[in-house]
Structures are given as C-alpha cells and as structure tokens.
Amino acid sequence: MSTATLGGEEVTLQAPDGLAVVYDISAAASNSPFRAMWASLGVCWPKPANRAHRRAMDKSESPWRPLKATLAGAQYNAGTFGGLVFDELAARGLSPDEINGAAAVALDLVMDLLPDEEDDAEALAGNSEGPADSTS
Image (cartoon, rainbow, N blue to C red):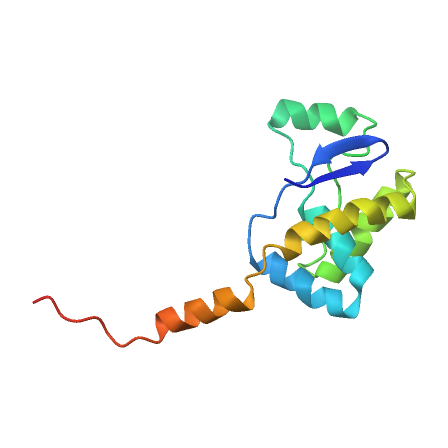
C-alpha cells in the first residue's frame, strides 16, 4: 500500500490498471524523469468510489479531487500527460516540492509493477520448451 500527501491530506494511491502504461512511463523516465514521476501520480490518482462520491469530490477543495488531465487527452504520451498533471496541480496552489514528493511515491509504485529480469527469464524458459506430449 502506497500513501502520498498533498495539501496535508494523505491518501492511498492506486496501481494503474494496465501494464502498457507502466512500460510507457518507464520509457519516459529515461528522457524526462520529472514528467515520468508526474505521469505516475496521474495514473495512480485515487478514483472515486461511485458517481455520488465523484460529484462530491469535484465540488470539494481537496487537492485530491479528480484530475481533469487524462492520459487519453495527452494522446497516451506519458511525458505530455505528466506535464498536464503537474500544471493542473500547480494551478491548484500546490508547491513543486509537494507535487514531487507525492509523485516520487507514485513512481515507486509504478516501477514496482515492472517485471524484473528473473521474471523475464522464467517466462522465456517456460516458453522455450517443445510441444507437450500427446495424450492420445
């Protein structure tokens, strides 16, 4: 469980739904580490439990209210999305230090989802065997 704090409010970050965005953020990290951090924060952003909760959060002044920036709106470009997330949070009055602190926690969560070399080796070994023996 990864928690982050913005504006004095602590929340639990949520792992992204898919692995593709994890690889996209990993690739973006080599070109722009800060944008990759901010994109991680965007994809790990807490989701409202239901419509009523979303409406209440949209009207709140919480720094954790839903983001307007979306990965789809950034044409699935992790670096662009990260910039949009940072700009939106800065417009909410959050300091770069606060944003970066929460984003660093999110980046750790995202990077932990990448398969490691041992996982890759096991997957390759599992796929390198010949066809299974026939049972007929």
